[in-house]
Amino acid sequence: MLKIAICDDDERMRQYLQTLIQRQTGEQPDLYESGEEILKRYMDYDILFLDICLRQEDDAQKLDGMETAKKIRAHSDLLIVFITAMPDYVYEAYDVEAFHYLLKPIDEKKLEEVLARAVTRAQEKKNMPSLLIKTNGKFMRIPVEDICYVENDGRKVALHTKNGEYSYYEKMEALEKKLTKGFFRSHRGYLVNLQEVSGYDRTSITLKCGDVVFLSKQKYAAFVAAYMEYLTK
Image (cartoon, rainbow, N blue to C red):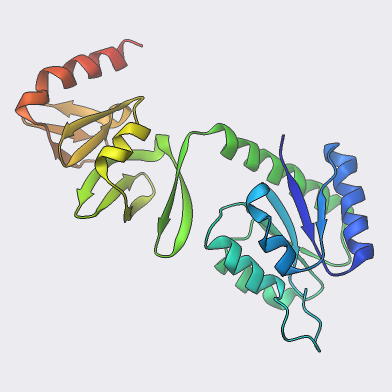
């Protein structure tokens, strides 16, 4: 079951959105009226409808929605749907990787479309095996199937994926335990996704992306056995 939250400082808007979302999903979203409140609980949710203009003009001490989103994004990849009466913030919304941007007054049909897509995306994220990593000060969720291979990089590991390379602090031994199914430690410096192998010889493995990694002589027989088992499944 997906968990949805609404954060808006307008009580009528909170109630209105809650009614619309409950009508469509059958689930009652939790309500918050400030950035400070949602920051205490955001890790509990899959989707957040967040008002950008949370802070009143005469209350500079309170967080606005964009500041709240930036704090959330530093630790979570939950789906954020911004809600606001001012379209000027649309470009800032991209900076925090917002899922969508809805303008007030709410177009109910548009809300239904966005919510349906958000629910589908959130379900896919829940069902897809993934790694949650922190890189460049941001948390990211990397689908396991997108990883071509992993390389030791000092005190870090580098994930070579279909969408780019991501380096973060992790021990190869710890990551090897997480990526047991479909992965093989070909060398002390490399962990290979078997589905991405295009060829091999006694000293190296060629990946579908074109990269070549080392294959330890001592691990050659075990690699061949693991790869043949993968191919015959």
